[in-house]
Length: 200
Image 1 (spheres, rainbow, N blue to C red):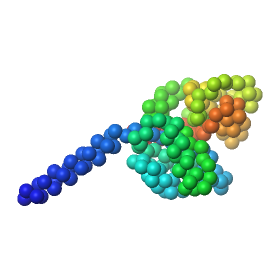
Image 2 (cartoon, rainbow, N blue to C red):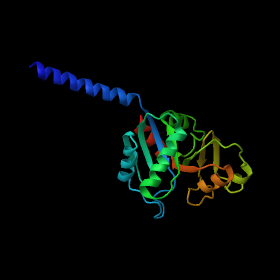
Image 3 (cartoon, helix red, strand yellow):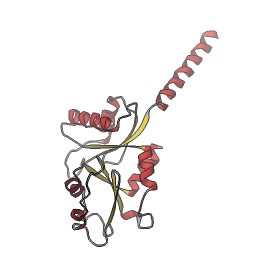
Image 4 (tube, rainbow, N blue to C red):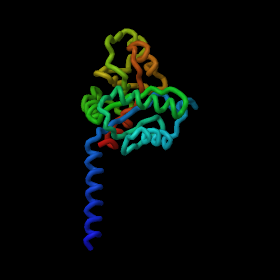
């Protein structure tokens, strides 16, 4: 009886320690640029999740095939995290993929700061940038968009309202990267909100 009680206490203690370690970790959302598009840079989500777990990340979850991964890590330096993940992907899958990492708080602010709340949100996308642009040559972007399209640069994100849909637009990740000298990857508004919901 005594040994059984001791075993239960040790088990509870171990579970408590695991919970405490988990609580000390930060939750992140990583966005991979340009995978599984047109047959290029193919990565299965189960293989991607395994790669993250091999880095020691916890509670790894993926969302759809565009490369969205929610995970927990003790690492607090976000650029360092992105570099660690990029190196792992290159070593595991044999090609380079740029990775943008954000915190839950970042996503909360992105959602709350939406400047196009009164528009059709099904036409809203967010471009996530590797850095806040030092210079914004608006003329270079403005000449590529049509009159009905709108965009708003807020820190390391760009809100883009595609009035006539994404397919016909000339506003793209490549345009932002060329004009702003940063790396960019874009997600639609539904995906942004879903990732935040899953990360909470």
